Image (cartoon, rainbow, N blue to C red; front, side, top):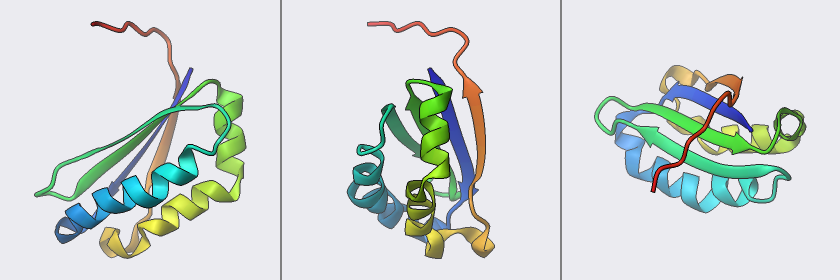
Length: 102
């Protein structure tokens, strides 16, 4: 399993719009990507800090996504919400150990 985390600042007044765009526009693009397992949007409504987390079957599946137009499409969905136009910074990690709890 492989994880991508993207950190950015969104204008605080865009909180509701960002959640709506994630659900209605970003998730449909993501669900078409081979190897995607899960996607999450986290953040603080008052500060505007956001983290999008995606889980992939493999590093290769993530690499295919990262090289595709889909990543730019998702990034551009939120373009008018980024503080000072600063786009997300991505971090990528293999999952070393995982444990699910009921």
